[in-house]
Image: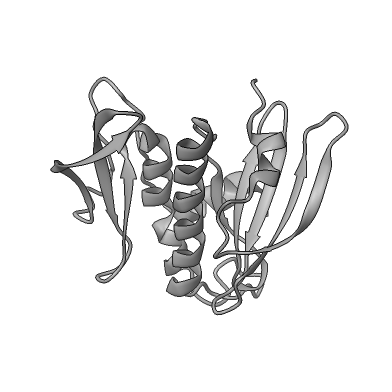
Length: 192
């Protein structure tokens, strides 16, 4: 099954990236998407509104406004948890809410760490269902590809593969609790 088919199966919602209108639009008008006007996050000495994304009743992700596209992608990907056993008619495993939380929590913390440490706004990856109940974070860009596979909960060791489409190819494993994976910077810092 290709990426486009998977995206179609996931949901019919979309987010429009608009820094002028500063809105996230969803066809589903999901009440779990909330923009909190009174909250602010300090980024490089500037006040910036934040997004609060409700993942479950007990788990929220807060992202600074600069991560508008990432916040929309996370919101759109929440439907992965609705994929039950055999969701693709090929016998695939369903997805645990805890696995999804592991994936988006890692992604949000990693994006903020890269921004805070290096002032780099990472590209937004696809968030996709993968084999055996795992979730893929997939960047396919003109100058690099990076795949991070988030394992089914409670396993907390992720696998990755990256290629700068020149000379650098990296692969390995890392603990999800360690979001400061500077090794990916050799790929994510490429200009298209």
